[in-house]
Length: 254
Length: 245
Image 1 (cartoon, helix red, strand yellow):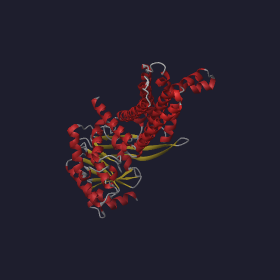
Image 2 (cartoon, chains in turn yellow, blue):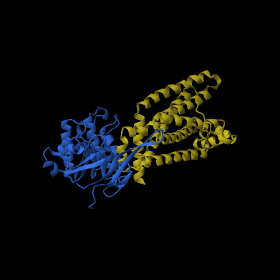
Image 3 (spheres, one colour):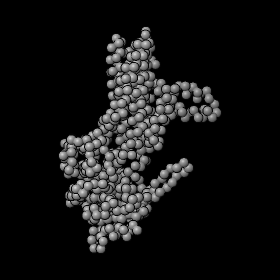
Image 4 (cartoon, helix red, strand yellow):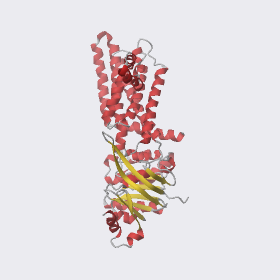
């Protein structure tokens, strides 16, 4: 067990440094800083709602920029490693494919966590510059974004194992991401549909992760603490996507 | 303890290429059986598309046979115990351009189960044996093809494997690099290790190997020992040309 953990840690660290050395990481970082600064301008225009607009706009941008990068990276990493034959050097060693997959996934999640934390600090500093304190739910909102990113990264990994290109993986994952924010609407439509429409929508209830569970900003009126169910749901979806990926990768030839 | 290093028994590998309707099948290896005794240097010769890389990948567990069985030291090559005893150099190995050779080697060493002082020593040894010593401060992006090949060889040697599987180890190298790599492989062979290599270069195979397998269209056409090609006018080249024509 310790051996597997050590192997997984080696892959995680390598994956983290590789993703953060990617030239797109720099581009996304510069864009993120500019976008967060733009939230300040939007806040100034909001006049008496300045703190709320800066907070909501900034948090949304932080999430979207991190999503864009993690989706871009996780959709292409396995395909790229197979194309460049880097994966040959890994799978010809005593590295179980599940351990490698877990390490890669953890590395990208670590990158996402660092991006969220970095941008969160910049955003909080900008709020302080305007004389506002980050609201109580702020850290929970970032935690909610992280949970969503963990789920969508695991899904992107799964999709990349059967899709033919990184673009199609990004498109499918992007659709699931969008649909996940309308999970209760999908449920409502399914419950009120009959016949073929109900048949078509029912599997969607299982396939679409409910990202509304992770929106701490929706609970801004209250303390905004994410419920334990949100963490359990994120762990369950991530694990399910990981296990499906494991099933696929263990049968995959390189 | 007397088991062969490598054993292929009636191995077949058919690739399935999915199409819009159904699939297209291509048999790359058919009814292939051979053994490689421990401590031998065995070469694999064949034209492009003959199935050499498929054999290498079957041997390292990257591909699974459609029929028959592949054994490495008596175990399936997909198992951890077999993989721990193999060092693999794929054709044209790739390393992330922004890293330094020792970082790449440390990563692959960790994946081979090395850690602590043992890992540092293994990296140091591999760097020294492959002549990468003067280039450790450079990034992989600055490496020539020959240096990349040396780095590829270094990662294969890191964990001191009992079996070295080398796919085109001298492909695209200059004569000096070929000479150095030949010397390195001869040293490894003298240490009692088993080497299985594929190459397009008949003269290299002739110089390095104890025995050569000639593959034609996925089948084993000829097996020839050193004494066999040394006693034949025209040497290994004549045997190869005759086999593939």
